[in-house]
Image (cartoon, rainbow, N blue to C red; front, top):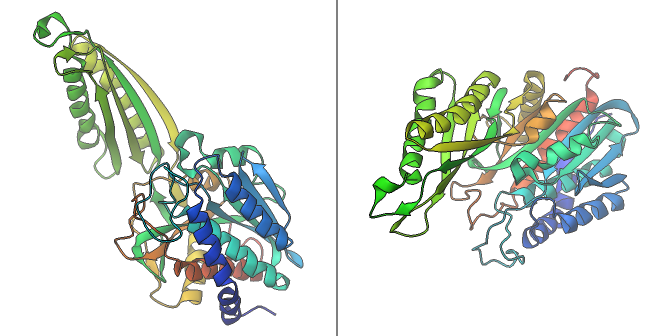
Length: 399
């Protein structure tokens, strides 16, 4: 006999105070990429108290727990990221960061606490779980090319047992509290990064004709890179090329030898992603050489796009609507942001969704951000229901 959503909500209300306290404790003790030692220890201790076997140090600082139900069935994987950002916090509430220069400004404290809460709920409802649940607590989502998902997958996180489907969430200030949103197909873009070194010839600023100014060349390179999306990419294929950093020169009256640029490219499809890489490698060299200088380009492939699998997304929408009510599950707009949850989706079908965080002033990556603890009710309910209702399905209904 299946458990009712009302009973699931009742269990969530019982565990909520403990999970809220955990979330605030994690916020007060943020740890950046691959330094999540305390966070991982807290997660592992919680799982062990729930009698959920777990492995630690997976992908360096990750934790993986597996809850096995009473009967055979599918394996559902749920993922949360644990790392904080290397930035100071400006909040003044009691649970503000105690680690200078580190802050949970992206909501990963809420993601981690939420998944621990789901483990609490499902361990109390274990007799209703068919198959198994794999809890993936991932380090270093913010790390880019050396992200935690890559390391965890390389160390076998998706085996023994292999998930039939995987789900993940991320807090979103643009989604109202109590609601979630998602989209079938591309939800988030690929995220790749580049560094450019432009070489000139240094001289006194009063005699520019005796040198070769790399700042002027860099200015031309930045302008030329902007023509990639306006003139080289098919207009119906979304793409971004952003130069986010430029550095060069030491004094007002010196023409420097070197200018460095750093930036990112974003796309939804593999063809556009490859085109952006090719042009970002080619254009700076061509422009610099045409102006008498030279350029070197380092391009790092980071995250592929997050592409939600159609059946998994339909299942997510159906389950979330049944649990939260009509009008509480919104159709998301595609975003040019990136997420290394995409790497899991390359191996296992699944879906990623946004968790409402209250109001538009709760912008992530802000020094005044804080996760709205009330969102834990929604996150725990949707993720718990994804497991419990999946257990009721015939294996293979969501592939």
